[in-house]
Every structure is written in C-alpha cells, then in structure tokens.
Amino acid sequence: MGNKRTPPPQDYMKYWRVVRYYVKIKYKLSTADLDMLLFLFSENYFNKSKFLEFNELTSWDPNRFYRLLKQGWIVKFRERKGREATLYEISYKGKRMVQSVYDKLNGDEISENRSVNPMFLKNVNYEDKVYRNFIKKMNETTRQQQRLSQQ
Image (cartoon, rainbow, N blue to C red; front, side, top):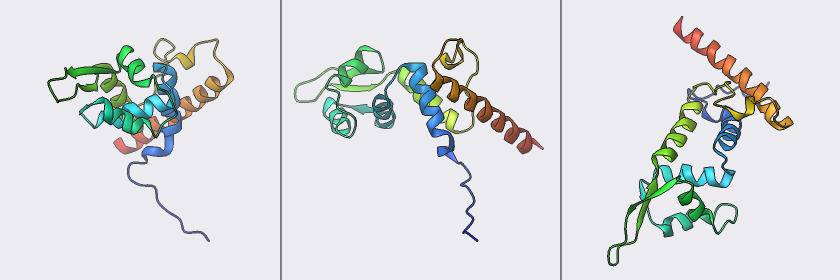
C-alpha cells in the first residue's frame, strides 16, 4: 500500500507539456525561446546583460536576443543614457503570449479551431495529431471539472 498523495489545489504542471507544445507551434518559438520569455516576463525591464545571463542556461543561440527583438517579442523601453544601459521589456505581443500560457495552465481550454490552432489543420504531421487528440481529451476533462464545480 503506497503513500497516496492528493494533487495540489492547482495542478499546474499536469498539462505543461501539452501547453508548451501548443505555444511552440502556434507562435513558432523554440523551447529555449519560450523559456527565455517566461523568465523575462517577471523581470519587467532588463538590459542585454540580464538577458545573456539567463541565456547561458538555454541552448546556445548567439542570435536569440536580436531575433526576439526583430520578431517583436521584446522591445526597447529606454535608450542608453550615459552610463545607464539600454533597457528592454517583453512586448505587448510577448506579454499576451505568456499570459495565455498561464491561462491554459489555470484551466482555460486550448482552441480546437483550425484558424487559431495550427495543429487542427488537415495536413499536419503525426506528432501534431497526437497532441491534437490529447488537447481534445484535456478540454473535455476541463469542461467536466467546470460542470462539477458549478454543482
């Protein structure tokens, strides 16, 4: 007889893999890019040194900073002034993406609409189909839990 544990009130990590895969496909981000944006989200403002400090923990990509800047995930907040470094922040687009990650982990459904979720297009690869099927099950579980909590 094992030690039976009850899940925490908010079991955030249960669907983390599915949410992460969805975000990577929808926004065309790598795992390391997503990790970086999640880290920077709570930093408010950061300089390039802070970015590079965390970047050491991710897969090596010397162009990540400039690519995320060019793609509009991060934006310049303040130009360099004297000895003060240029400051950056997560863009509105980036903040919305990160907030959607938290919303999905908090129980919001992942869209099954093919115009919103590229995994639901007809000609997707096998891995997308596997995740798509799991998203359907995950959404159904979420709906059942919401119905039970309303009773």
